[in-house]
Image 1 (spheres, one colour):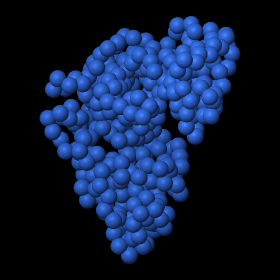
Image 2: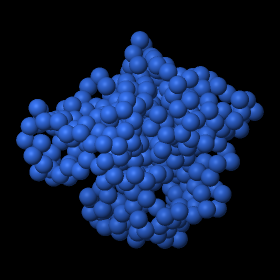
Image 3: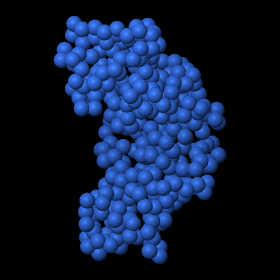
Length: 350
């Protein structure tokens, strides 16, 4: 529904809905026999509310128009201008309460990433470029905020370039004081991806910008039996009772690029940061942040910046940062902004 009304069109059929009136449609609606259904607001600029969806802030409303596809669960494709898309990406990817310069850095990263996605179709069957999840960029999970809209508007059209190409700008939550390079994903460095290198995120006095943040350092004590089971489950490899886990290769910034888990029934080697984090992740243990707060373990280990050792039937994992560590640290950007750095300076560092 939309405040000023809706129009639904499929082929030569057109349905009109008045102010606030609900357009309800199911996969077997006769309109689908004439193709996809285009839904537009009557009043230009009106947002369209989709009451069957639930997002982080409740029932979501979207700019632009919709195209509906008939399927078992129904597929909704939202079409809108790139800049307006960013209005709902920036606050979904970075808290809108962050410093304006950090939000502007986020806007430029998100715009650069999105621009590259528009050069092809990730969902050709729906004529769509991206979805609204972490598989691409989170879109519409948080409500639009004035600060995020301002950040987008004040950087309108600005993108990151390298070697005369718009870069795919990656970002993540929190660093351990350093970023890492593209090798962490198993990608070979070349002339096109040299903009992604390891850098230190430190102030002029040598102290890390994020040194006081909870996820800057963390620790997990994992019982031997639990880690044995998780590694077997996550790698689909039977190794028996775990005897040792060692980091056998590290990359720029100290990130783990390879681990070997040895058991009394075999061993398994795991490469790249994401697969390593997945191999050691899962439910069953807790992680203590440096501020003393404790959280349950998740599907992925917080980061691949860690050391691991065995002690009295447990594996002690001491790590730092949260996320893949490639590109811009969002919390690092915010801390830099608090210290007076501009979004240009933030982006130039990362």
